[in-house]
Length: 72
Image 1 (spheres, rainbow, N blue to C red):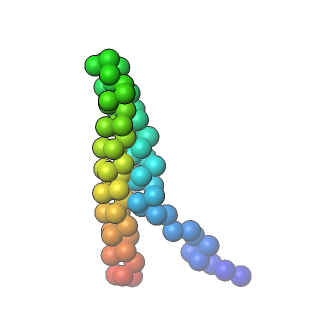
Image 2: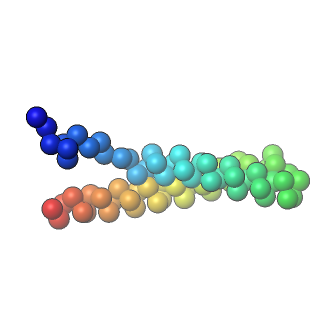
Image 3: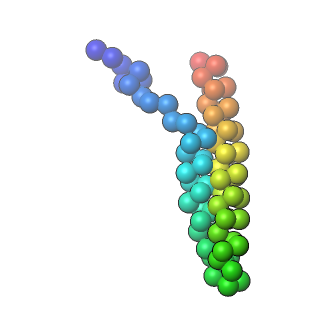
């Protein structure tokens, strides 16, 4: 029978970062868009900023997990 450790699935930090970044970006874009009365401009800007930040954070997370795995 397999160990519980072998059954664990690896979580992609970049994939998680993109999805969370897009969600926060939509929230940010809609909020600023409503305040400035220009949702058409701020929604894509918010999504772009959120996805970009999510990719950066996710890539950093993946590197940390890789470094942690190399030490063990």
